[in-house]
Amino acid sequence: MQILFHLGAHCTDDGLLIRSILKNRVRLAEEGIGVPGPGRYRELLGEASTTLRGEPAHQETETAILDAIRDDETAERIILSNDNFLCRSDVVLGADGLYPKAQKSAWLRQCLPSHDVEFALAIRNPATLVPELLRNSGEDEEALDDVPITDLIWSDVIGDIAVANPGARILVWCHEDTPFIWSEIIREVTGHDAFTEIDGEFDMLERIISPEGMTRLTEFLDAQQMISQAKRRRAVSAFLEAHAINEAVEEEIDLPGWSDDTVTMLTELYEEDVQRLEHMPDVTLFTP
Image (cartoon, rainbow, N blue to C red; front, side, top):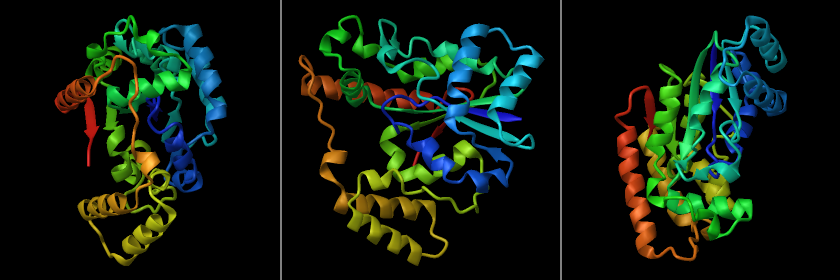
């Protein structure tokens, strides 16, 4: 059986991806894809991984975990999601950069050691990620005193996951791209048939496009026959430009000590980082 752990990351979709996937739970089950409710496994896996501490679960333990998680014993693929699988949001940033506990992803894998495991996560420009992490945690800029902001490198995080989980596929996409590839991300994560119609394909866009814009976009797409993904993305881009909800797409970066040059520098480092990810073994970087 295949098991995919969606690791977040924090401050990307905020749980929207698993909620969108759950809308298709019955349909996906018909294809052998299990999507258990998060309440069935988040605490369970946290306790099990902490107890095992990277040691592979015995068969009896693994069977008990699976029995508690899955609805259908015939499922060939199971999707599990939790932003806190690697750590809580207040320890995402540390003296060693982003997600200093990324190697604990192996603790998850060892909860179900006899099955094929994949990981998936969205990454985000540290220039916008860091301010939101601080806002969400209620901390101020002093929390960054020991954090080297030029070392907030996602390829290091992905590299730690890869080293800790040899041979495991790691699916990665940029948070900034999600409005354009949301339905494709759902398909990549679940592995459902490309011809399966799914609900929730506009869930991300509905956060940032006005209701009038969404109506016009869906009417346009419904009128197209066999529209290509490239044309679909161009349509989304055009409607987003014309109908975006300004406060939803304009990210305010207001941290004492951060200048425009700081934001530009972090953005350039992020763009270089994304390019590195394209060439990493066992990493699938999903882009528009």
